[in-house]
Picture (cartoon, helix red, strand yellow):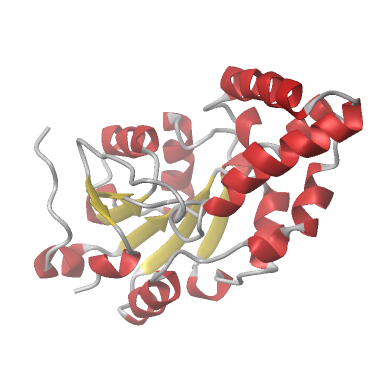
Length: 224
């Protein structure tokens, strides 16, 4: 597939709906990587009396088994699997949640331009609540939706069927931004007209590589 260009002025005018991911798109994924890959293995090792190396190995395998499923994003599931209070631990370190550079400016200007804004996140509702307590971007959105409320992760076509019925938007006139190529591909197959990836979802790590989609360093690059 030919690589898309970044949104032109004409395209921006035709877009009436914007769907935005949260972690890695609005918010810096550095928090989530720290939480799941550093802090939780330490908490698991302490709780279960194993070494941190053993904890990392066990959790890596557990993560791989459930990756891409709704359970992968469910902190109730992980609390049960690990016998840890994931929500409480996440609340304890929530001050580390940060916007990606350019996020507030993009939200302000997109809203001012009269676009319909919807947050579509795979994050569990409790995770969403914890993060909104730190960075309240809710004022910019017409609605905020966790995939847990649909019964499908964003990787599943069922998710897109649900939100199309719920919001009655025109996919051809919709912009969707996400840091996952797999999710962008699912949205593309559903018929979303404008698809954009995020080059640096985690500000501390190397860039993502999108072969089939345009990508931005900051959301403000989409403004015209």
